[in-house]
Image (cartoon, rainbow, N blue to C red):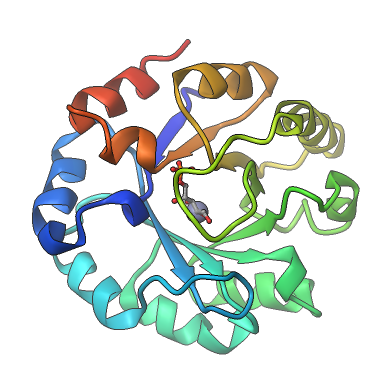
Length: 217
Ligand code: DX5
Ligand code: ZN
């Protein structure tokens, strides 16, 4: 499968969100990555449902919601109503992950499970068959523009091995510090989807930067 690119709106110009979403619409991006933060699970607060609904009205790409919030199961119906494609919850926030993943799928969305940089791939052994996607954080979640954590490359390879061994269909997404150099190494290690925030939106030509990420071999 050709890899997918999901620009992270967290690095966009929030005074000109329409222009930014339309840029993504016109680009070779596959999904739009949306970072939801609650100031509890992560030391930052981003945006919530009113903003997501406004984006949904003009967004032509599948919406990929990355929930950095405690008790994400309380909001499954709300995310389904917005119409997000992927509801992605952190392993570290879910006491009953199997139940949460099942409820997300029952609500008509794809279910993603995210691991913090310090959480080992081995905890996925008994959930990877159920998940549509596993997101490995390659920075500690909370902010755009942080430095890539090197062990993410080797960790991606370990997840690839686990998924292939179990015959799971889960896609592997990487998020944090992705650029052409780290992105290439992550794809070589087995990643399917690259998220990029600063590298896309702070570049002089975001459309061309998305294309360059998409053209990585
Ligand atoms: C961080 C977010 C990321 C962030 C990535 O908590 O999950 O999606 O926007 O930004 P960059 O690509 O700048 O590291
Ligand atoms: Zn994210």
